[in-house]
Length: 425
Image (cartoon, rainbow, N blue to C red):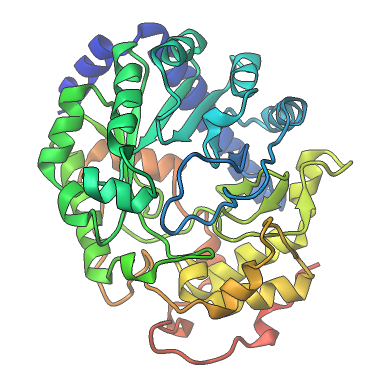
């Protein structure tokens, strides 16, 4: 399988792009994680990977979207983006995730990509704006991989994404990337309406036949103003998804990403571990894209490393999350997020200004952490080694989390104990 994957990458991707991937994202990305570990040992903090939502606008209206896509367009301007990326690079970072809205609606996107040939960018996109000309420019940049979202069959895609003809436009953009030998991935937010159609070996085989180099099955999270809880997966379905990914990694010549499990199959939250935090289109620094509250901003006069390191709000979030679950605190314990917001007087970082009301109205949902189920460890030696080195909990759960104190959010009605969440000065 590894030989077949290597052959695919050598033959189906531009060699220069492959080198950029290996150097900027691979070698330098690993180096950024090591720098993160050294900082943690010194009691310092700066996440090695940043999610940056560069614009709120989008041409689609997806079910469960938490981004203010219908509001007046707002974006991080090129100057601010370059300043932020340059400051992050000084901390050792080299790999950035660009989100929206739809990132390709930001007219300065290529100005940013071209300004940082020494960094690597993953752009989360619906693919509708990737013409052949755009794909050619992506290939010329060499330091960017589009991650194209496919959410189901033609009918399901239209329903999920609020527009007719979504799938055909997405596949056209995807094919433009592949025709130009751009390193390209496909992601799916697994939910009740696409679970049986896309969590299939035949779908993975189709992606391989097309020339897609990596795929990511992540889990639908019912948050935002129209969360559509009926789409959420059950614990059994989430386990099945995890098992599927583990099995396919040993069989198929395609890279399969996951962001919620370590090498031994233990659940984790990348924001709780400090691996990543999120920047919204207004420049506010949030714990993650679905927790839309903030105290700090990239527009702060302080250097970015100082902003992150001195943020008591983000520090308390990581501590609170790690003390209570290895899963998603926003799904399992929205009451703790409410408490966190009030302790720090954090602002609602949305344009709609209803995030707190949404939080209080939210019901609990299962996340990747299922203490009553046996973990599914990695079977692939390559993924095990990679995760052991670069993607694990960095000791945060060992320091803060006590299994005996965890309460199942599906049955617990206990209010949070304020004594547990005193801020460490």
